[in-house]
Each structure stands twice: as structure tokens, then as C-alpha cells.
Amino acid sequence: MSDARRWIAGALLALAALGSWWLTGSVAPPDSTADPRTRHDPDYVIEQFTSWSTNERGERRYRLEAERLVHYPDDDTAHLTQPYLVQYPEDGGPPIHTRAREGLMPGDGREILMSGDVRTARGADPESAGGEILTDRMRIELDR
Amino acid sequence: LKSDANEPINIRAASVDANEKTGNAVYRGNVVMTQGSLRLEADRVDVAMRDGRLDRAKAFGKPARLRSLADTGEEVRAHATRIDYRARTRVVDLEGKVWIKRGGDVVTGATARYELDTQRFTARGANDGQVTAVIQPRPAETPK
Image 1 (cartoon, chains in turn cyan, green):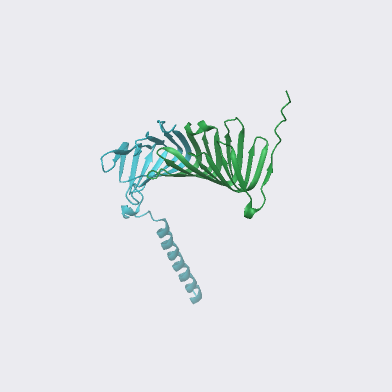
Image 2: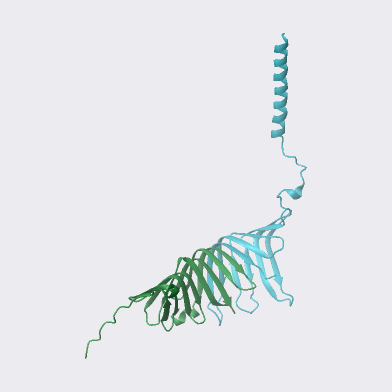
């Protein structure tokens, strides 16, 4: 076989080897031993979640309930299903009730992002007739 | 109506940013706020509460729109780029392309202040420019 042909055959073989090496690299299954902290996997789930927050005098400030809470360690967020927040104003006014389809709470718990059919209702009292708020998204900065 | 202040406040908006500590909230996106006969429509409304009652509502829009009924039963409508409603004194400050219609009377100018209960308003043109007012003649009383 002439030299030229031998060279061409060799080049083609090398190309084929290179191609298969690239192919195996790109379709290889993800490395299951990857660091769990970098993956967005939950570390705990709480069904029928309820939590209370009080101020320094032990007076209740708010109550947060949800059908389900899922916590993610990588970004320290908590995802809530059907969250229900009751806020107890410091001035002793009527509680403020907020419901939504979904809720998201960052790790520091300073705020809660409610989304989907958000409905806030505040009862009447001698000072005010209360009222209602309807929205798609509500960010509530909690007085921690 | 004077009784508006004792009515529930209902607000609809696309999104809400609420601060529990200050009681203030910013409503954005097709905001409609009603309290009795008072109706405020705007792109954005900044609401300040005090002691659980509405203290102030600043509406921004292109234009923002306000409608209210005077105790005489006459309807008042107003448009402006910015409408600043002080709930306790029932005074409305309007700024930017102001248009006010009360019954058959129409006033336009750069800024205006409208006292909902006394129905008194003062309007000012830009840089002492023009205020236009179309005051409908009161129907002549038929002599007895």
C-alpha cells in the first residue's frame, strides 16, 4: 500500500479514535459522587408545618403555617406549599392573615415571598374597618 | 364621603412589597384601591399605615385616577401624574397634567389641592402659567 494511502488510513483511524473519545465524554452519566452541597437537593421536608415567632418580651409576633415545607441546604431556602401567615401587630390591632399558593423563605427568615392568589385580610377594630388585598406576588419583610 | 374613612380598604395589584415593621407597602401593576366611595387607580401606589389605619396613599400613573363622592352626592374625578391622598385630613394633592371634574365643572393645571369634604380646591399653572376652568352656570332659580 503506497505511503500516501498508509498515511491517509492512519489519519482516519486517529480521527475515529478522537471522535469516540469525545463522544464518550459528552454522554457520560453525571458523576453521582458530585458534592451534594452544590446540587439543589432538599435535606429535610416537614408536612403540616407550623412555626411561631415572638418578640423579646415573649409576645407572639407571627405564626407561619404551611401544608409542606421543603428546605434546600445549597441556598438555605425553604419552599412552602399553601403558606398561611398570621401577623400580630405590636399596636394590638387585629391580626393580619395572608394566604397564597406558594411561599419562599430565605435562610435568614427576614422576609417571605408569597406567590399565586395571594390574599391578605385584616379584621376591623374600633380604629379601622380593616380591609383586603388581592395580588399575584407579595414580599413581606418580617419584623424579626 | 366623610364616611369613607370608616370603610374597609380593598386593594388589588400585580405585586406588593410590604414592610411589617413600618406598616408601609408598595403596590405595583394595575393597582386599584377602594375605600367607600373613594377609588384610586394607578401604576404604583405607596401606602403608609399608622395605628392600623390608612394614613397616606401616593399614586403614580400615566395618569393616576381618583374618584370620590362628595357628601352632596356630587361625583369628583381627578387625573394627574401624581396623586397624594392624606386620609386623615381628606386632602388630595395633585401634580402633573392635573384634570379635575366636579359635576359639570372642569379645571386643569400643573398642580392642585382638593379638600374632599369642603370641596374646595386651588389650582396652579406651571411657572404661573395657565389654569383653565370651565364652570357650569348654576341653573337659575325660578322666581317665586
